[in-house]
Image (cartoon, rainbow, N blue to C red; front, side, top):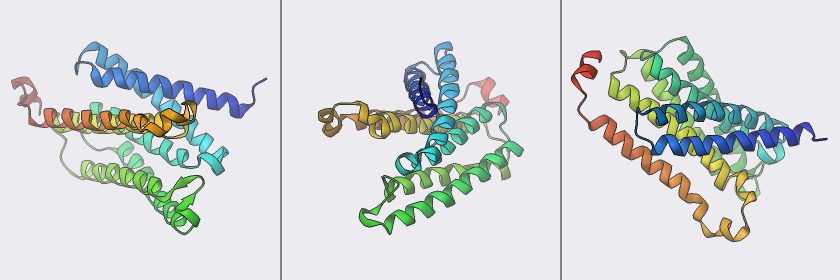
Length: 229
């Protein structure tokens, strides 16, 4: 009989795999097309489930995967606020709660990163200080943008879509990192791990995000979109 830890690990890997496949489909599909919409929904649901399970595993196996606790929280806030942006162009109480979670995550990540710097090799709980500081920077950027949304006027269509886009892509970036260069990398042969090829998915996601952000913010809105803004 499978132990609870093994079962949750399998669920984490399974939902994470679905998230990566669905995220790749959504990123490649024509934006606004039914394929993009449905694959995006599958990505969001599977990513949130994988992140919640990963956060739990991070606490349960803190000696090996503690960083996944913070990565899980960040992923849930990114995906949640991304979906919320499509329905609520103005900041609300949910945005405030997400913003608070992100700021608390920043403080904790900076603290553990600083702790790692003081350790031999600059490593704490199996991960280097740079990894904690990188997640802290992502969480801080998300929190800062949430503050801007809460206090400014409602977002226009291009900026609302751009906000949705970069948060979904960052969530996808975290999922790909976990699968290919993080804990999931152990599933690949050592030769592949050492080749550097497993870093390519993250690079592709980042470059694709930049392309779609530029396209979204520079394209001229249709008359109906301009009227709605």
